[in-house]
Length: 387
Picture 1: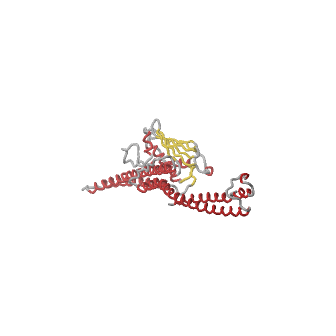
Picture 2: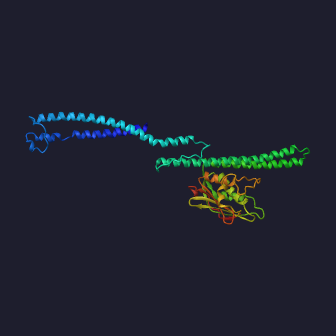
Picture 3: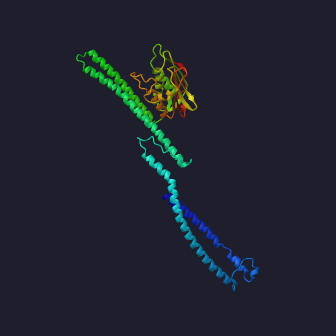
């Protein structure tokens, strides 16, 4: 209705303007200049066509012409008004039809979007037609639905994996308790061993819940940002790590100034997870290389190791929660959340986390965070070292 009134209003305004212009032109008609000068001249000598007899005087002719002019003017206005009214009705009808045709695809898209829910988020508008604003809008909505479907699928996988990871230790705890309850001759040593195992399982559950809380906090985003010296944090993480056992991976570092802005605790957790992941999934006598620096306006921390071979098609999966290269590795206290937490922290800081396999085995994981606006305000330094 609004589009119809808009079309009709535009036609009424433009028609009234055209009628006013025509009326002004009629008002300035040169009929007096044509007929009056021919008074007293023979008809064959007048350059303008004359009809009727000659009037007795110019005033009589002028009066007659003025009367005829007013009559013609009145007839012109009446007939133009009828014509404009008729065309206004026609324009309203055509405007209604055109508006309905224009809005029909929008109504179809609205109905389809209203019908889509979490159960049928796989449906798409699939709008066909020429490349215009409506086609672009439909394609944008389809892209949004695709991203929502991917997010919902990831959430479902996350909930299922989290439930599985939490259910496994609970089942084991229940089995240990039932074992002692059914033992008719329990001993103090047996109870102590059982309680120690249950305590270890509880510690694993606590670490899992802490990791899940960190992941949820990271995906929520940051409430405030402060300058963070990425180089200093990396040095702290490396210094706090226990010494590797004999034959274990050797940790080397190359620390260059790198300043970002964000949550220092989360950034420290990011670096610690990358180093821990590189140390844990390595080969005997392997190497872990940690490097920080500023590149292309970003603060970068890169961690590479000499672990097992990683198929390129599996790299993206390792950044998702509860995903590990060796699915059979269970019960080691780790749940495949290290890289996913680091990924979420990088995204929360407006950065990126990229992983790529090394030709000889292992991964190169690089986190790039936006550089702080005033890096000179923080202490610099930290040269090349070895841990």
